[in-house]
Image (cartoon, rainbow, N blue to C red):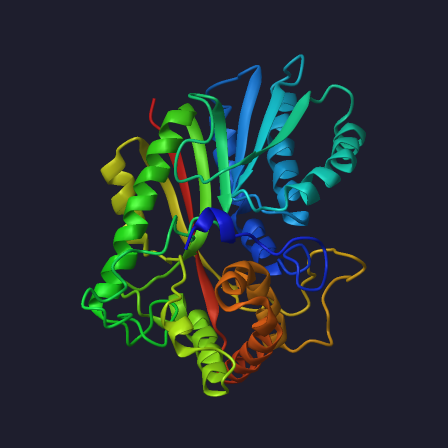
Length: 379
């Protein structure tokens, strides 16, 4: 599977779009905000550049994208005012995501965003230049020493590719039959393949950012992870287990071929803190300032507003928790599933998935484990 071609959040602002179904991601950003503010302030306690380079990696589209940028700019500008600086720095903001991202949605929001900055920050703020930079962050994206602060949220759990080694060399098919990610029945070779791919990608990511970030610059990264050392733990893979069950139900109904399920593997990995630390220490270019874990409800928390889109409004009380979770997951993974299974089965798949999630939520209160990592580029 070519990640650059098929992975993107659902576009637009309709009922199944990411813009309308990103409450969980918004909550993750909000929870990580104190660490982000702390990291930004630390940078400018030591350097006062005339031009500040900022990057948001895996920016996606919808309301979360520019809300993160606004927060970063506000913290920096408040620091400048506090220090009595005669003029604002120039801001260079780079929004990065894969080529299939809905950058047009983001660009359409920029005029209103610039007006908001002018009205709320005054004429002394800026100038501010925002640009889209398509491409994989598993490699160089920006010029050398061009960035002071890098942010990424809900992105680094996506791998650069499906791990190699998931198919039997004897032609016997998949090692992970009937599953689309690690599960409690996955053999060790599947776990090893996913862990190795994560470490390879994590190493490339850190090496690339080390060349792009100035000495003393900071990164704050938040992504799905797990507390347990065991990748088979429910906290990191059960949402995929339920999606695999929904697919296998459709196999039994003759709607999908079983071989199609066996040949699909999610390019995703939820690492443990130890795996994250290992890559940082091995790379040697960054100091680990903070690594924290927190939990987020699968459905984003009852009563929380969803992203604004096409008159959708906020929290939809007519939906069950299972349906809300299914909409959130659909907005994220539908592009991959549709390219593999076809678009005509998507509605049926996520209807079934929502039912399975609803039954699980009636018996348990599952939460995503999110890791927040704050790093300092060594001088």
